[in-house]
Image (cartoon, rainbow, N blue to C red):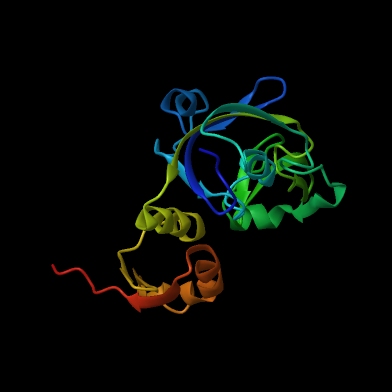
Length: 212
């Protein structure tokens, strides 16, 4: 069974640098090795929808279910290093965030991974490049199955966009998602994408508060 663009598939995967450093996986034994708190669960995504690395998606289109080893050069993986992403940040910014900067330290800077290169006086040199930028990476992929259930596909896409699942109802060509109040105006911004992928008209309604 060949898989095509827009198909949703379930995979098990492990990502390593070319020199063998493990950096990502959805397998329990590998997550333990990298001390990751990521949940052990199936990874489901739609091919060609930007839900995984483009180099991997492009490779898998037209392939059969099964196991593959995929080598990605920087331009296909996490990009080349960009010197413009290395910036000077005033020390007081770290104090405001209650962070004591130390050279070599990795931290989350307003949602962006960053590495501290130097600390000198009142200024800190910070590298905002992805830690894997400029590196060749190797992924071992096991394509377990092609996902056919529509709700399972929608759940995977919801998880990708919003990092959570929503109660849903599918009526003919309409998808109704029950979302938190703060998301009622935000979710419909993706109506065109849901229509493109699932051929469903998206409607978001506020979920009812849980009864105490």
